[in-house]
Image (tube, rainbow, N blue to C red; front, side, top):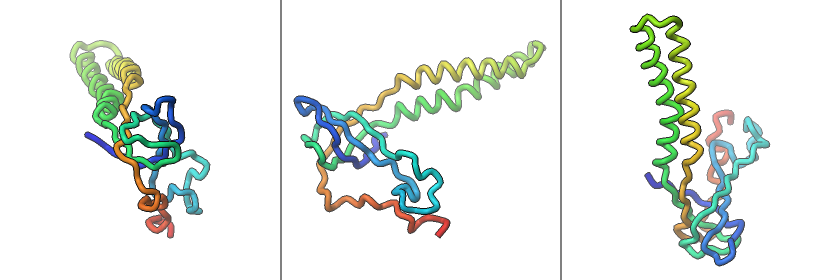
Amino acid sequence: MINTQIGQVIAVEPGGRTVTVEIKRAGGCSHGSCSHQIFQDVDMNVRVRAANAAGAQLGDFVQVSFETTDALWAAFLVYIVPIIAGLIAYTIAGALAAPYPGMVGLAAAVIVLFIGLKRGDRVRSDYTTVRRLDPDSIQLDQYSCQNCPFH
């Protein structure tokens, strides 16, 4: 699954083939002016290195595309597989009348969790700048307090 985000080029590596893009992570009231924002001091910007297919220059706004399949697979390995492994180990330990089947299931879940975390650390997304954008066409304040449930 391919996803796109809008960001601003904050650095261009020598040769111009790779750029660093700052993408503003957004959510309800994320622009910081809402008085009801829970985490006002949290930096909501993400910096990524992207292949410069669009020929972007420093300060340009660009559309960045990236694949999300690997990230979803890593999340599955970390959140779902340990639960399944723990339940299977618990069931087998119970069927074999092993002492403390709950502890066996928990140990299996923790071991599989750490394996999933190690594999998940190796997941890297490939970011690519798809196109340069006109700064006047971008709505930087699209996540304002107008949708805030507290207003």
